[in-house]
Image 1 (cartoon, rainbow, N blue to C red):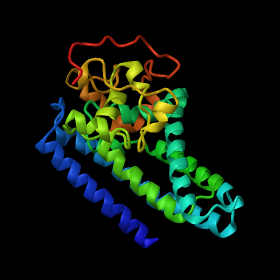
Image 2 (cartoon, rainbow, N blue to C red):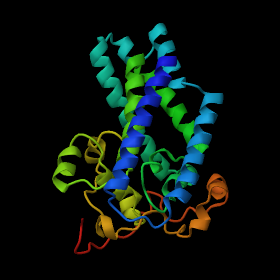
Image 3 (cartoon, rainbow, N blue to C red):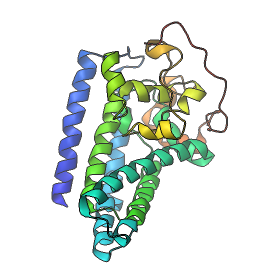
Image 4 (cartoon, rainbow, N blue to C red):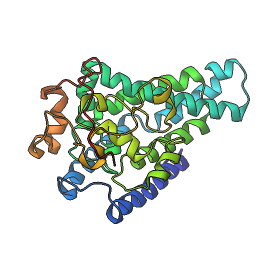
Length: 282
């Protein structure tokens, strides 16, 4: 268990430093709010999330996998699938569950209120990838525990998935410039920053697209893929239409946002108009 914590923190620290440095050297977009102000809000929420998990549910997904493995529960154990195929299937299954969970947080009004905290960021960078309301984190962990139990995921599969999810969340939210040809190749295998940035558009139809976190295939399979923002990556507006003032998204207000905030019209059932494409799609 201690090694699991060390592995996860090591990957987190490494990816964070790499992406934060890349953002400084070659940013994709100019920031509209100072990095210091946003990072204080985002890192504070991330700290609250981690303290809460450490107190209430430390390494619960790994512990669940240990119990499941010992008891022989879950579909893979029932079917006696061999070890490495079980690991691959489990990682893919858990990633699909996270995709569907993300879709659900956009479809259910009560859950969308929680998820607004993630989308209300006026810019998008490496810290946005881990900025979620503490209650959303708890719900997400509960869904993950259920998924691990149902599939009968091996412990190593859960560890691999947690590390990948943590790393790719920071990678695909990063404000980094990437050559178009590199992006087009990478997004066949992993969700890239340009692909996921579309999801943080203020435009409703673009917000309700590109729900994948790790692997890009689910969006294509389930018809939620959108290649580029209509206004281009330089011209698009990040965030939510009802929260354009940085005073609306300070740390205290973000924590109470699900309870008192305006949810707007971002439910997946309210698709809005198709965005008008501008000349530039960079």
